[in-house]
Structure formats: structure tokens, C-alpha cells
Image 1 (tube, rainbow over the protein chains, first blue to last red):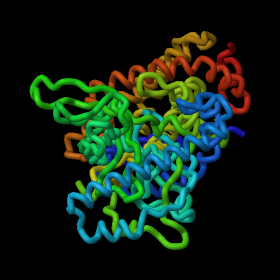
Image 2: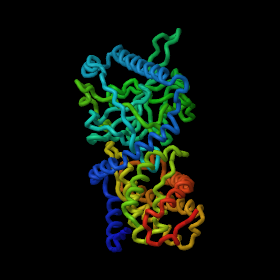
Image 3: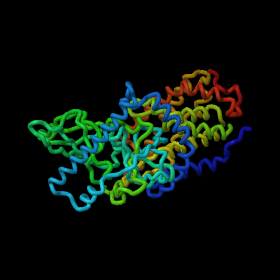
Length: 300
Length: 188
């Protein structure tokens, strides 16, 4: 039952012309293509899910636990959660001491950063490269909203939901994507005898094409290779504050600025290596003030 | 050619390209099965059928490739991959009567060629768009030349992936209903 393709070369030429026009059309005319893509995603999601599961089985995330995985994993999750809370509290305390908070931020302190964790599977990636947003299998129906952040292993920040989600799908843009702009982050040195209450060191992270960030610090700043770098960006939701962006991979001198050093930060987990992520969404019963959070891109 | 079989294969390839193939990533890129499907059809189907099939595979690739613009709004640009695979089909069509179809390396070389040709068109279109002042950065901060290097690597990886996957595809040849029959089929 072989069927023939449309034979008319005129149709082919017309189609090519339409494709050429669409290829060069301004992005603001192409909003409708996301709806078409969402329909396609529904068709490819089951096979994509299987592919991701197989991939995760064949190549587990970098630090898959080998001994008593469940207990160790639970302990790691607990440690990461409490460490992130501790770091977030340290950042808040510093701001209080400096008396730089405004009333809105103070209100946030009162409300806390309650959230519900929501497990989401990655069901679609760019086929041609390991960059750009990924598609998740949860959307509005599960309570996902634009701006919600995704984490892994409790405290490692992976990215942020861009655009208003579909009913059962959403797009997550990795934190390493340059479209986020520069990120405000901080290194929190451990207390020492000589300096029991060290100040945080602010970093302005710029995303690099190789999936890392770079930032400049003073030459005498107390940063060391391996130090965790946490997000402290008011343009991101409160639930992202204190989450780990990555670890300092290298610290190099800047020949053009002898008083500055260049720090390279590498995320511990790459979004494109994972099969599942955890979204921090507003609690079903109440809600953190996501509506007050700046929407993605508003800072730009 | 049975379009129903092709559509299922195209959806499967699109899904696997966005999931499983990342397992074999090297140097920031991963092999793709889409060029293999396009070359397979171009080797056996009539010319117009092959061109429509190429465009359809490219359309699916375009729709599964989200990008974000300067306001973090996702964009699915329809056209670059569709035109890219149409170009790839037109690279393969003149060669199909000249190559040794029974040789597995034929598919490897043609898939690498098709993948590179497609990437070349995609890079050219995005470079042209950048001249229009678009705020989308499809190359992840790389230059167009850097992207072409990545395209070459992707072509080589896709060619390598064509060896085992092409064998599987050839085994499924009877259900595709190619009118040319067994005499034109590759036999590995």
C-alpha cells in the first residue's frame, strides 16, 4: 500500500519559499510555533521519556552512590537542604546587619520561603546540541509557574522555568544559559579562629559557552578552589537564594588588572546530563509571593 | 514509500535525538539519527518523496529545538533544519546512483555528508538572522566558525552512529514499501 508523495514541483517550490520566509521572520511573529511544538512534544514525550530513562541507567549522574545508596542519598539530601538553609540565613543576617533591606524584603523574611517540591522528568532536549532549554513533563496542572526554579540533590540550582507553562509541560532554561544575564552570587568562607564571622564575597557571574561562569574578585579575597558559590540574586525567586550555583574550579591572575583575580565556577551538575529534576513550586495551600518576584528577563 | 511508517520513524528519531543520543555526546555535541533517516529515504525513495521526507524530518527537528530570545521568551524557529535537510537530500540524490550501496561505509559517509550539509545551511540561516539584529544566540556564545567546527564533529559522530543504526534500519526495509524493490536495497 505504497502512497506517493505530492508530485507537484510547484508545491515543493512554494513550501521552500514559505520556509525561507519563516526562517528569516522576526521572532515576535513566531509565538504560534511554540504551540505547534507543544503538540509535537506530546507525541514524542513517551519515546523521549524511555530514551532518557535508558540514558540515565547507562550513564548515571556523576556522583552516583555505590554503598547503601538509599541511606547515603537521604543523608546527602538532608545535608544539602540544611546547608542551603544555613547559607541563606547567613546571607539574610548580613543584610540585616547592614540595614540595607527594604520593607518588602523584611516582609519576605516573615513569610519565609515555603515551597512544595515537585519531581519532573526531562522529556525533551535540543537534538543538535547540549544547550538551550529542556522540556519538562509537568505544567500548569501540577502548579508550575513561570519563574519557578529547578534543583538537583536538594541544593544545586539547575535553572528556571521560562514562559508561562502549558497545561502539562514547561520549558526549563539552564542556569548556564547566557540569556539569564549576569547572576549575583556569593562565596561564604568558613569561619576561622582569626575571623569567626567572615563576610560573604560577592561575585557577578557571567555565563561562558563551555557551561562555566567567570567572575572577578579582589586579589586578597578569601576564595579557594572548591569553594561553593551560592546564588544571591534579587532578580531570582526567594526559593533560589542560597542554592549552589557551582564550585570554584580555578582562580587565575588577571594580567591586565593586577589587583583583580578571575574566578571560574563550574556547576556540579549539568542539566543536560540529568533525567529528572525537582521544581520548587508555590505551596498548594498558600503560596510564596511568586507574583512579586521579578519575571525572568525583567532585569534585562 | 509508506508515509505512515516514515512518520512513526521520524517521531521516534526526533524523540531519541533529544534524549538517548546525548549519551554519546563528545565535545559538546551529540550524534543525530535524523540524517540517517533522511539518507535512508533518499537512497531508496523517488526524488520528490525524498525531498518531502527530508523537509518533514527537518520540520520536526525545528519544532524540537527551543531557543530563547532576549526576553527569555521561547522561540521555535521553523525553517533552518527543514531547509537544511532538503539541502542534504539534494546532496545525496545525485550520488545514490554512483555509490556502492552494499558497502556499509557508504551510509556512514553519506550520513556524515548530509549532517554536515544540513548544519551548514542551519548555520548560514542563523548567521543571516544575526545580521537582522536578532537577540537570539543559537550558537551558545560561539562564533559561526566555532559552530561549523561543532557541525563537523556532529557529522562525524552521526556517521559513526549510522553504522549500527543503519543496519537496524536496513533490516526494517521490507515494511517501508519502497517501490524500487529489493534490487535497489543495500544488503549488509
